[in-house]
Image (cartoon, one colour):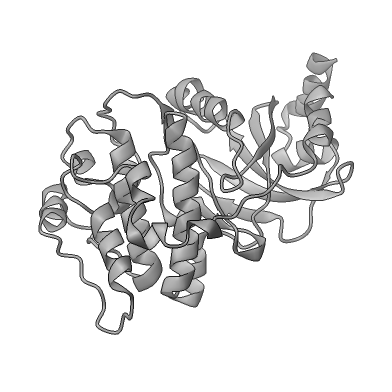
Length: 307
């Protein structure tokens, strides 16, 4: 049946669209169904009739990506993602391959990503930054306890949901290993000094550096370091702490101390995720971490794979 149906989808040498395939499975789309577009994938918003719920669907065109991506990065991302279950991580309901597309059905973040939010609204208050950072720390704490480094933490990969709930997403570079890495991955703006220097690095400590950059941008709406410079010049700025807090910025000493700690140049002296939680700025209100039960709809979405 599968082979016959795939033939029908490709009959007449016309390639069926990803949206048509999703419609076949029962998804409905409104005019604003496009949520975003990345290097390898597009994200749609679709209403699944049987679940009576709207989901985000990540679609990867397997004909447009490299063999290395198909054979290494995509399987690793899905393998990691399927094992994750935390209220501050975007939940994967189902993934399946059909025709030449890989589909990932995940929960919808109605507020979009934090970079888009800051571009529209400007920097957030320390209170908001603190609340969001607590949730990101909770997500990283969960990942790191499972031995998983995210390796691409940035504002574009942090999503805003209802009631101020924050969720980390995109596990394309995530890796479960305790070994040092020598792979350059992630975004230069968020990269730790050791990554930019091209030396073997602790993936978990590099996540902490990215966490510090994320916090700095939240409250200033500026990058701490200029990404258009050569790597060595960026590293020099990182080592000499040349990032500057704007004169208009009114934040507490505890906030600055926490960000400065996350942006410690030497990874050996940079806190790990467990030590981050003990920093005064984070420790003073850890009870505000959001937690809740698993989202409904997992069983219904399982029917998609079974068809």
